[in-house]
Image (tube, rainbow, N blue to C red):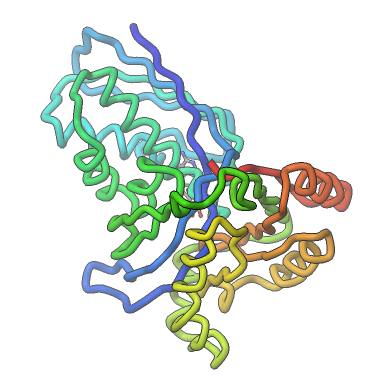
Length: 298
Ligand code: ATP
């Protein structure tokens, strides 16, 4: 038996616009995703002498499925299929810290970690591109989770372009010490499918339409210049549950420089100049009954 263990990191969306629905049912999106330091801990144990086809999953969060509905299971199955492995026996253990169905890609992060570990455990030596192609079969955010850090993602999310800070920018630039507070109010929940349906029905306001035209370039300029991103935008805020805008206001009142809902929500985050400032805001929000985390960009 050999076991590998890896952290699986959450993401936040700094930018997210949703385009037309495609014939395959997915929507085209344009998003800037940023990996953050909130993580699950995922282990994979492989029996080197498998007799048949066996995947077993354990998860510390009992509300998550541990059968074929779990994203890690789907990823393992897709991996064995792609690389022609007919006999396998793996046990996957997930210590869950990333809130689920929160717009933070926790399931995709777990799935990506499993692909990376199976690649090593089974000595397949597939490159990232091949793993991304397996991951994209299971979920649109998995290719990003395999690559990490910060990418502009297009298509259904699988066409990735890195977004770097310019090499001429000092290592002391604000973006390098920037931190985020993520808030997932226990009172709020979102169904991603429902959120997409609502978006198709609610057209963007004139201000949103303006932002959708010029905002992405402004955000990319801020990042390249090493600034703390200020021009944040998410189409899903149009379909956000009541309570999201109050949380954003609360984050602003606690000193966040910019705020946005992540993914299809309902998590909301605020960006702060330093981790210390973010931790102070997180502590206040926790005393107010919210689930909150202070994280770094990773
Ligand atoms: P995204 O930002 O990519 O839309 P999300 O953060 O909204 O993702 P996830 O936490 O990744 O959502 O999970 C969405 C659904 O997938 C959950 O409702 C859950 O039932 C299911 N799921 C399956 N496997 C997992 C897993 N390992 N971790 C979390 N959710 C999982």
